[in-house]
Each structure stands twice: as C-alpha cells, then as structure tokens.
Image (tube, rainbow, N blue to C red):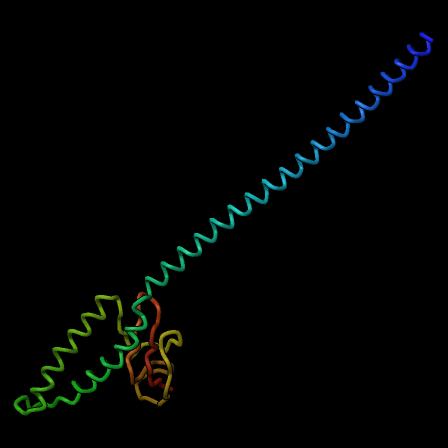
Length: 178
C-alpha cells in the first residue's frame, strides 16, 4: 500500500501543480484586464479634467464679455435722450437774447455733459456724411439722387448711430445717394 499511496500523493502533487499553473495564468489575464480598465479610467479622468478646464475658460470668457458690455442696455436707453437734446439745440436761431436761447444754453450744457459721460464709457458716435455706405454700421432709410456725390455715399445722417467698445449698439439711420 505504500507504493499506491506514494503514487497517489505524486498524482495529487502533479494535479495540484497543474491547478496552480492555471490559477497563475488566470491571475495574469486578470491583471491584464485590470491594467486595461485602469488605462481606460485614466483616459476618462484626463478627458474629464480637460472638459473642466475648457468649461472654466468658456465661463471666464463669458463673464468677461458680460462685464465689457454691461453698460449696453443703459446706453441704449440714454441715446434717445441725447437725440432729443440734439433736436432741441438745432432749434436755436441767431437771436441769443430771447427766452428760447436761454433755455437752449442750459440744454447745451446738459447735452455736453451727457456726451462726455458716453465718451467716458467708450460709447462713440458713428461718423456719417460723405463716407461710403456700410451696412454693418449704417441703416439705409432713404435713397436720393444728390448732385456732386457719387452713388453709395451717405448723403445725410437722419439719426446718429453709436458704437460701444467696437460693437454697434445702434446703427446710424442714413440717406444714401443713388
């Protein structure tokens, strides 16, 4: 019986070694799968970090644009007031002693102050007459044949346009020569 027991023990050892080899092989394959999974997760992490960085940049740019043009709405509301002051000032005649001239002198002071405030906040009037019509800054309202002026030129500014830091906030309403 001793011989049989030895053979059985040898067979069990051999079987055990075979089983251990299989375990090791499975473990290696399992490790390769883990490595692939880790690499995949690292890639996802890098992508998430890049997305976060891009999101921050977009938000910073958006906030910067908002702050740059924060005065746009109030400027648009003030522009009709400036227009009305200009109309009133244009009523002035050569007689400087009448009541109208005295009121208009006060209007001129207020108007000058408003224009200074607009310039302080980089709101500038669009230059007008005798320049080529540009649809990005002009709104053509009328066309008229004007002698001595070539076609496509601004003949008259009917309402001033304004630019805020390079952005047109109100195009100039103009009459264009034919």
